Length: 93
Image (cartoon, rainbow, N blue to C red; front, side, top):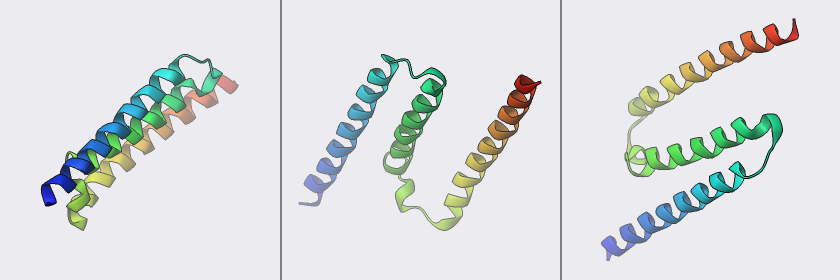
């Protein structure tokens, strides 16, 4: 009984990942100007989050593990933010 629930959950995750993949391919067909990269990154981040939560079993981990997951993501966002700020200030000059 429980295994059919697990199979259904993994099937739903697979369907979600396929829909997001189709959305990625569909978004690549249109020119959104400067929003092309942010749209692709948002879709890829959602897919990576789903994979991490379900296939890497982060959903069931304790708080300390979440600290080790969130902190590198925070540092990545910080580095990207500093880099983007530097690029944008150079473009303005």
